[in-house]
Each structure stands twice: as C-alpha cells, then as structure tokens.
Image (cartoon, rainbow, N blue to C red; front, side):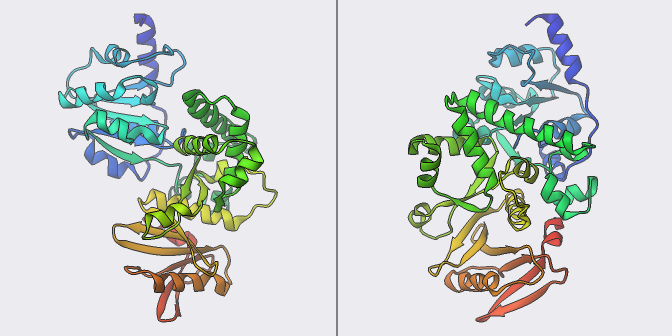
Length: 397
C-alpha cells in the first residue's frame, strides 16, 4: 500500500464522530482488556463502529475501516499487518467490517494469543461468530449483538412517543435526521446496501430482482408465517434458491425468523416459521402495505426486544388454531407472551396463554402486553396471566 495513502486513511479514520452512549456499552467495556477479541455484530448502521470508537476513545487505539472504498478490493491478513505494524503492544485495535478481509480470523487469533493487541471486531453479518469463524479463532471471541436503538434508548435521545418509534425505528442516523425526506433517503440506502452489498455481491446472487422482491415481501409481512410453496409460486424460484435467499437475507440482518415451539425438534421443523424485521423504520419504508397496522408493528417491536434481551424466541399454535405470539426461552424456563395493541383485550388473546401453560411444564407466568396503562392479573383455569403495558415492558432493563 502506498505510504501516503496509508497515512491519509489512518488520519481520516482516527476522527471520532460525536455520538451518545448505548446501553450495550456497559456489558462490553469490562471484557475489552481481556484475552479474547470482542465482536460486535448486527445490521449495517446500527451503531457498531460508533460504539467501538467510543469505548476506545480514551485509550491508545487505532481504528481501521475495511469498508472504505479507497482500500484495495482484495485484502488479506497482510493488509491488516501493514496497517498495524508500527503499533506498540497493548494498543486497542478496532477492525471495522472485518469480514471484508480474507483470513482476518487467523490474524486476530495470532495477535490475541501473542497478547499483541486488544482487538474489537465489527461486522454486518451474523456469520461473524459462526462455526467457521469460531473454529479459526479457537474460542478467542466474545460476541455482542448490536441492534438499532431500543425503545428505551429512543425515548432518551429522540421522542417519548411509542408510535413515533413504530414509524421511525431505531437507526441512529435516521432518528437524528431533521426531515422525513432525509429519513426516507437513509432507509433506502440501508436497504439497498444490505441487499446489493451484503447479499448480491457477497454470495454472487444473479437474480437480484427476485431477491429484492423477496426482501420486500418479508419486511411487508411482520409476524406472518413464511410458506416456501407460496413464495415459490409468487417469485417463480426453486425451493433451493428460496432457502438460500432466506438464509442470506437473515445473515445480512434484514429479517429474522421465529420457529414453532415444541419439545420435539422434528415437530418444530415441520411447522413454518414466522418472520420479523430487525428495524421498524426499515420495515415501514419497504412495506407495500397501505395500512399503518400498528398492531403488527407493536408485535415486531416485542420480537426485536426479546432478541435484544438474549431470549430464544418461538411462537406456538394450538390444536384448535389458537396462537401464542411468542414463547421466550432462557435455559429451562419458558414464558408465553401475546401482544394486543388495544386497551380492550378480547378473550382470543387471553385463552391461548392459559392453554399453552396447561400443556407445557416449567412455564413462568404468561404475559399479555397491551396499551392499557394499568397492569392487572387475569386467571383462566387456575393459570394466572400478567397483563402489562407494552411501553413499560419495553422500557424495562
């Protein structure tokens, strides 16, 4: 690499943009000085690089942006070494979008094993901590999922309105924008980057049009089950192509899927999955729906929050067609949750929670999230159901 270009890039990269603290920083900071690399993974523009820069700003650090268009298209471990060869031992090195560099895993492992640098790695692919990478790193990584702002963070930095959050979502630059037009342009660029750069370019997808149509369909239908047969008819794609495209879009953090809950893995796999967007603003922008459908958006907000809080997330359908929106599991305990964006709750939202609790063991108190400001308890067949305000539940740490 040309020395002048290297110096120019390093000078530009060291400028730390103004930002506000994120809740996840409290979990990351204690592990930064350890013997493992810290990994921040999540959607593009969710704040990973900004968080990393904030955390190292008071230390000796070097920030490397491997998404910079001035860098060579083909990069490997030698590129990383060239950019870090002059650094003293113990420096904090931020490797932003490291997945763009071939062989980055072995280089990071070598540096961590030799206690040469403290490494913070960011990436916009869920494969950053996949089996392939984990094997190369030999367990030398601690990962943190960084999502767009939670409703709790949104109320601190933008607005107290829950409906604003459902409409705008949590991308930091979007909520800081001063006009709706600017917000729309940002969301459009995020969507196109995720589709074209994180999927089409990375996986060599030839039919970008069908891929984009699939992404639009998924984001337009939060909380609905995904049928491969229906998608195949609509998009005229093979089952193999559909399965690949769905995986690619999930890897790029455009959407995530929720499987059916069952103690039998076979039974769970036989049922279709539900899909949700990772950001409500992007979902609103891309959606082809002409209705605001705040109920669906509120359900999506709860799905995102459960992922943020580290739960395994499922849904459940009973034999009579009743449904529980979410089954949140940590360890052996499971909590069924329904979301009803209404103050007057119909019985069809309460009964499935009691039915689920009667069928399965080790169930914590079922929860019903509503717009009603006052919490209360409903009882059905000796099952106590906690009715909570959805905004208060989202604001809870």
